Length: 151
Image (tube, rainbow, N blue to C red; front, side, top):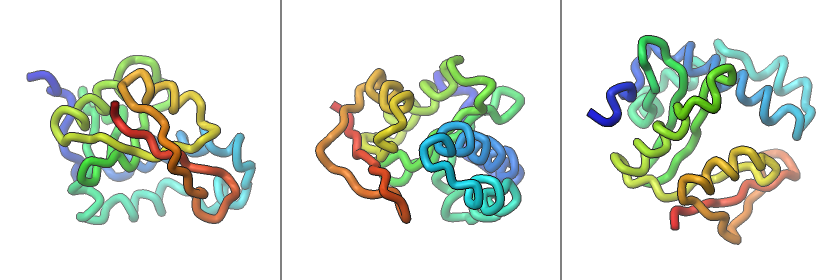
């Protein structure tokens, strides 16, 4: 089967998913926002795991698991909400496989990306997404999110 390493997330995965998310947020977004209080006090694995354990979120979350959970994607309808890969494992096609799974199996065709996250924008462009003119502010900031859609 094409996506043998991708499965729906379970409660047992929430701490690992939260760990991947927290470290990606710190690595990719802290340099943009530079908010010590949020990134090093408020944003913690335990509190994020509690949020991710919600059945509604788990229902839309899929993990890349080849014996260890190495990445995850959250899909709602045809929109990708989040896609993160363990930072030490980025560049090994894990994110690409998760995104292609979302496109092929769930019809994913749109997402929002932080305008200054050029690395993520390039990744999505390589998978057929293009930036639209739609922009919104990231909650509580002066930074823009840009909507990207599949060609």
